[in-house]
Amino acid sequence: MISWPCMLKLDGDGELIYLNSLRDFNLECCEFIFSDDDYVIDSLGHCYLIEYISDALGLITVNRMLSTYEVSNLIRAHEFNKASLCLTKIHFLTVSEAIKSLSN
Image 1 (cartoon, one colour):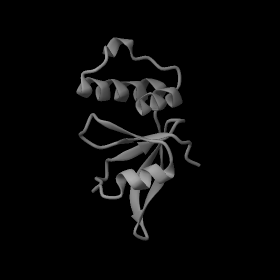
Image 2: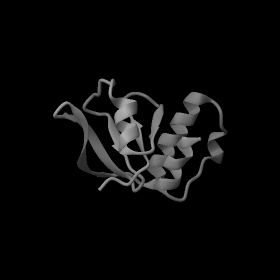
Image 3: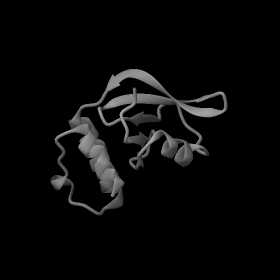
Image 4: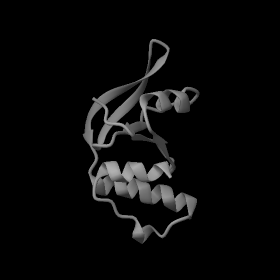
């Protein structure tokens, strides 16, 4: 079961997209063209591939889980692209805390 909120990681792009719910995922991403390497990371660090299932977006569980350290590094890359924060000050205790930081 997906633990919301989540974040979308597009392959080759440092920007992350905050997704508060499945509804937000469908609204935010309905017009995207996804690659096989794009994925969603939930608040526990579980990764999901994105597929179209019966003309709707679906999330498929993969056997991959990111650590807080790995998610923090994705957030650092995201913030580096925005050039709005000091990267050395970015630190999180949990994956959930890291993902929620994107909602601001």
